[in-house]
Image 1: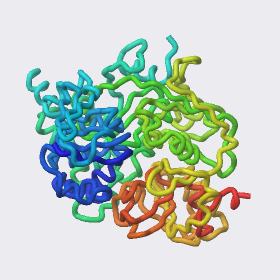
Image 2: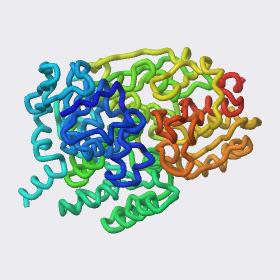
Image 3: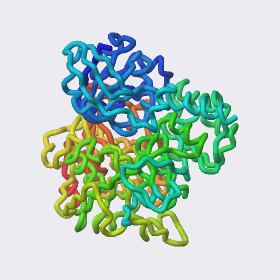
Image 4: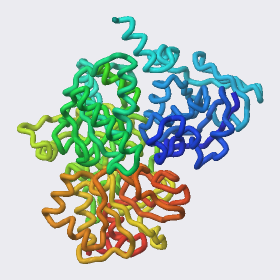
Length: 160
Length: 414
């Protein structure tokens, strides 16, 4: 639940560097954000939250970007805005991405509780509650199922 | 109801007479393009987990470009998985080692005006140059398309970028895009549709239009679109023109008008394509490497631009050229364009994504300063985090190679 705060336009090359893309996610994840925040991959703990500014996840379609964050135990992403392709990828992997106009009020190291269904972030460090946009209804069931693959598995299993 | 080109394309794919920006619709996919990096190695295990079959194999096109040429065990493995999978599942539309997917796809006639298409790569908006709605998706979303033949979409608003007049000699589509990205930012497209219009756009050859739509990705749009016309028809060798255009007066999110005549060559400094200023402000930068490559900057038209500048000149620095497709390279060879580049000292690299994607053997070493015709200069993307990449048009990259410093190509074209 610790917040790792990054700036605007964090790009997918920084989140999942191209030179490691030939490997599996276990080999990519240790290099996640290494050009921007060298201590991140080793310091991040399961349950932590990554907070970005504008246009988080700009650049490539590589799904390994949200997958690396998820692999490291990140349970939610919060940003003022997300790059559209990255946003779809994160939700498709079952990693909630929450748009919060007030994301800049969050300081690095703050303890957060993100309720993405209610569209609310409780900042346990400052006592503030931040409002965010709820995840769109047509995607909520997919996120609850754990992502598109699990969602399709359920859907196809039922139709069989 | 007056509809934009984007609305018309989405409405057709959604089986509707019209759609409204902001509403969520489900579209039937006419074409799904897959490459080696986000393709078989990711899709095959997921398809097997679901025990599902591809909805329509005739609508899937597989192109290898990221891990070519194979240079180590991992890349050989990725290519082998791709080739085996194509054979196993029976995909006939397979272009192996023919060049970069965004260039090969229209070159081999897979795209047509009016289509609704997805690609497993962020530069998939390139297809929008053919008045097709095309955008990039990740591997899991591609799996969803392969299994269901459908994808959800929030109907986009349209941002019109209109260029009146004509681009000056030595000024290209790449300059227009660097200018727009500098002006509006990496999220200026707001994940909506950007439509390029105006006399200057209509006068551009097809591959220059592709550069505009390709870099809609760096502008943060879902897609970039251009209405179809005679140039589209001729490039695709269509018997009849399939006219797709916005209705006059269709509501726009924004309408920006520029005079193309006033546009100077642009350069984006490290480490963002939005870090753009006119070329004249970079005269003291001395790159050690010039790179003409990628779907953005090494198509036949791009090679021709570089050759126009380099004819009778020598490159003062290392010059690497990776033509975007084998077919473009062959045309360039036959017409003499390639020889001009080789005579200038260019080293020819294979027809793939190469350094641009941060793949392969030629990554930039520590502290290397490079000028590149590619689309992205994010920190560390093309090699070492300490390398510095300046983005520019093929004209400007070629002029800078000849001068040994960042150089306005208009000086050399006179």
